[in-house]
Image (cartoon, rainbow, N blue to C red; front, side, top):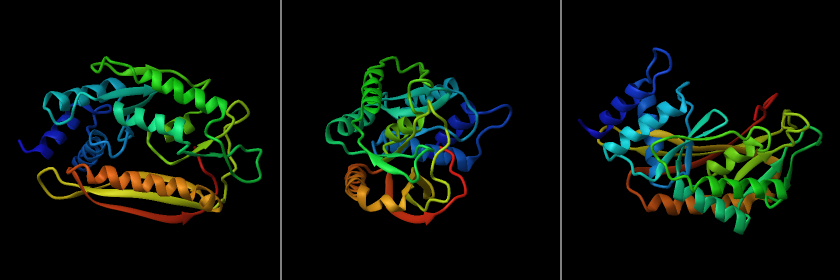
Length: 258
């Protein structure tokens, strides 16, 4: 079988939700994302193609590993019921960079604020979360998902931003309420896409998509530029993906769910 067909077969075998398997386009899109994680172009992916559980995602990943399509450095993390496929080395280096170089723009979007504001990513609660994540990544048993329940202590919105390698992440005080102050706030949507070609036609996929308040663009510009440079550098070091494109647009939404 050709490589793209192998990816499709494995996805359709293991990642069914109920009686429904992933479609071929969904399977190819997932393959492109997994390839990007494998290459370190993105540190992790959040599995949201359907309702498959972490065990199924791990079976999918283990099958790809047994076929030598991806390496043993990838594992499945179940964070409060959300499945992620993680490149251990890439996430570790990203976390260490955030901790030591302050390379992450953290935006406070608490409902009580009139407008979003940038705050220091080295604040106690965030710093301890990132240190906890580094400890978790010492998890060695790649055959099983790593299950982590942190709904009370961690702001998952901020954690996902860090794990997925975004240069910007949102934070709010979840002990107060889960609403935010982003309603009708002009948001810049930044996307990075690339073309994946295993052996057949090119499959274009969106590798990154995140937002930040347009009013904070200038304040966060240096972190965005650093992220873009690092992404371009990592992209040059691999051959799986081609034609990296980074774009931005502005939207305003009546409500924003984080």
